Image (cartoon, rainbow, N blue to C red; front, top):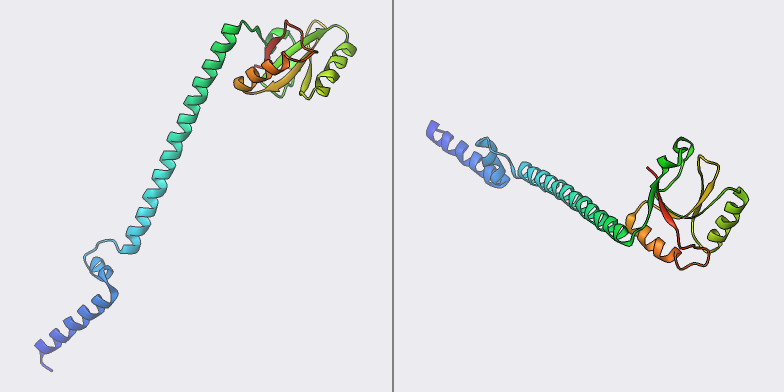
Length: 174
């Protein structure tokens, strides 16, 4: 076999192997990424895009919640509801309230009276919390919630109950 024939046969063999292996052989020879590497990169880009979109969606939800809260605060302001913070009760360090907002339907110097009203509220299907004041009084908070929208809805429902006086107010746990 002559040298030229050998080189031709070798080139044909290399070409045959390359054709059987597809484009990846040529890509590898040229120092380019293979189809597997391209697909892995495509999947990585898709995952990064999905994560970015999730962050954008999360920010949109936060912005909507903020706008809703501001709208609810305006609604409460227009209705003339009275808000009072826990820190103004002079016993905030002793309070371990589980919710941010409570509808206070009564305050009593006698704890038994507060317990009686609390049981009435519970029997009506509402959550209730007895809240001690620094001056010895005990407030009865109904329908505790962390959401201003739920607070508004709860306030409208509680106001229709027989146990609810006209002068309820909102306790803010902050």
